[in-house]
Amino acid sequence: MADLVVGISDLKVSNNPADAMITYALGSCIAVAVYDPVAKVGGLLHFMLPDSTLDADKAKDAPAMFADTGIPLLFKSCYKLGADKKRMVVKVAGGASILDESNFFRIGQKNIMAMRKLFWNNNVLIDAEDTGKNFNRTVRLELSTGKVSIKRAGGQMEEL
Image 1: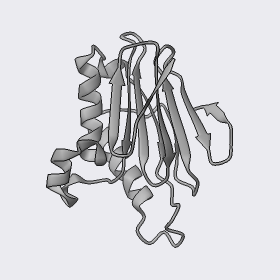
Image 2: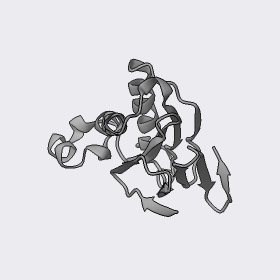
Image 3: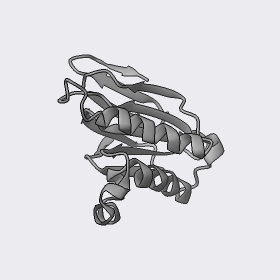
């Protein structure tokens, strides 16, 4: 099984059951893992910032950088491979306050709020999440099963 690495401001989708997707060291960034168990289609997004209006040019070049452009792109990319919104299992992780001890910038919280607002407006429910706090996370999605695993800083991989 080959791991497809999803970098910062990146997303991957696949319908190959031999694939697994992984993204490393989520701090204030958020990973959104989606999976359709019937079509066996999944995707993983690693977005960095809540709102593409911060930099419209950057959003055109790297839509996966922002919640409001990356999340719709993730879903639409899965639909192209046969996924159905009604069957999608959605799991999310990240949104921590790592470097911002005083929580002045609140990027992690803003990312969580932007993601939730987008899901709420589109009638998407989150099936499992591990967000906030002050530690890094690694997230892995296996396409053969739809299992999403998470590793917290210094911990073991465990199912989300």
